[in-house]
Length: 200
Picture 1 (cartoon, helix red, strand yellow):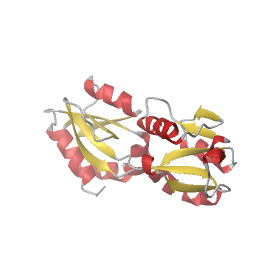
Picture 2 (cartoon, one colour; picture 1 turned 30 degrees about the vertical axis):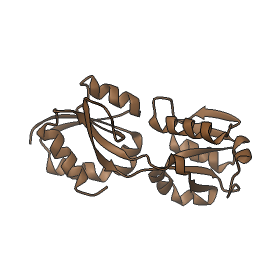
Picture 3 (cartoon, one colour; picture 1 turned 45 degrees about the vertical axis):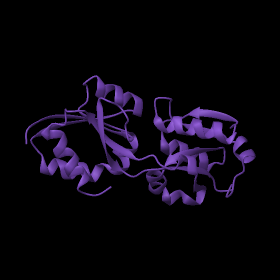
């Protein structure tokens, strides 16, 4: 198979779900010129609609008349707090900083909605777009965050510094393959099949 395939993906997909799958894809499709671009959810969708990307891996499912989607990876947001707060109350969380990504990130929208519905008002809301930095701040007991579960698993060696729990309203944050309707080329189909063949 030959051609150029431009794929955009969330950082969580690139860091935690795709690496081994991409190795397999490169071995199976060495003739494809593959370009991978990391971006936030909303920007990925805009690049796809503008034709700058052929396929994206982003939050879904996508409800749009011009787009199709298919489940790629199971993911959910987990609340991560300092270890000392094993069962934090809203008052406990209101005394901490909250670490989030920028507003073009779908996870940020979920967290903002959760804050509004729960009545939690953190001492400060800081945009820190680095999970290692976020975990470091949590470990020092000064803040909390809502983090994709695959990152929580990845930082399991530091579990003595944090407490992770589920928040029902934040639960599902699955990642989907998304492409423009009626434009799923053989290159796109093959990429999805190879990536998906290793299970979600």
